[in-house]
Image (cartoon, rainbow, N blue to C red; front, side):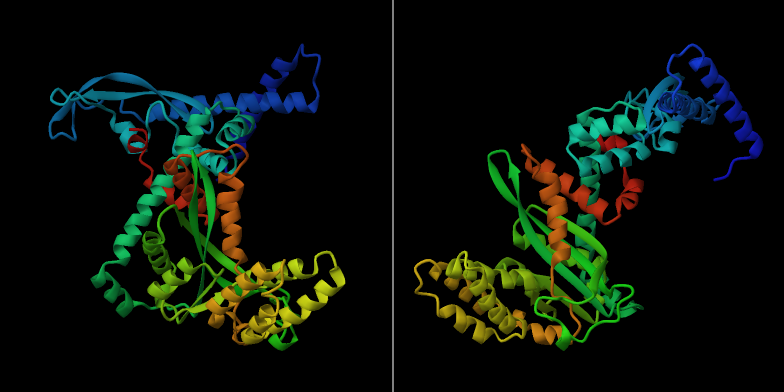
Length: 453
């Protein structure tokens, strides 16, 4: 948006004159004082300008009657004052107000047309509060907003707005689930699809959240694609050192999450996959840890998907075993690990299991050895890393682990945090939408009246 030179000159001259007047007798005329004063002037003027503009949008000669949602007609009552809280500060305005003689409900056509809810926050401020609320604790977020915008908001307002966006995301996910399970819609989708992705990746993980009196698992999923990092040419798989996963990186990550049994979470896995066209893709690749519930979901909803156990999770079992065997003898530990990881890297799972079996009877290492044997035996086909590398697959699940850390660890597991189940779910969903860069998609769905009913 560009303003005319004349307009900008007039506004600048007015503000400069007012600054001179405000600072005329001030002992401190440093840059910090000047900038702080100017910010306060802009905040005050912004709110008043918004209020004046909203008032100007109201009809000067309002209609005597307007339709009411009850089916009757609401009668004009008065030009009533209203206030909304915006990113520019409080904005007060007047508009025609009607009251229905049948249902006794009041309404303002201007509020409905502009999407305003008197006494509440505007959509722009709501988004900003949500961003603050998904980034840090609600009380701290309120302080940050006041510092940045020079407008005071309460901790509860930040919580309501943040979790309100989580509720919008939850409603949208339910709509996705319903559509994805509509057999006729699915057949038509398959028949008319013009674009089919070549390869789509999915990852699923879980992390526990502190609720009042218990801990509950938040399941987190991520859909993404993979590309080579710019400026790299790609080393041949045979040339990659053990544990070096190459020059692949994830892009276009979209996250989803919920606190529910795996069987119910599967509906969301399928629905979000349809949103990313995973159901239409030539190839779907899942990279995750060895949790049985994850692979059961993958096998049920995406039976043809390539299943890969995250390299770092698999290698961690050998590291834990080596720690128990060799303790502080770093030299022997690293020599043993180099050989064992080399076998795992080449997908020679039987050799790895045999190596672990040698230590089953060890007094300190026996438990770690048995855990490794069980893990590798149960995930044998998912550990064929030599073949996976030849096929150009990414073999690390850092994408979804990062999502778990960002959604659960960094936001929900802050020191002293105790959540209700609803609060944790909605805050997590709002944060997932934010990390997926989808908040702007939710804004048009916002219904202030419903959110604050």
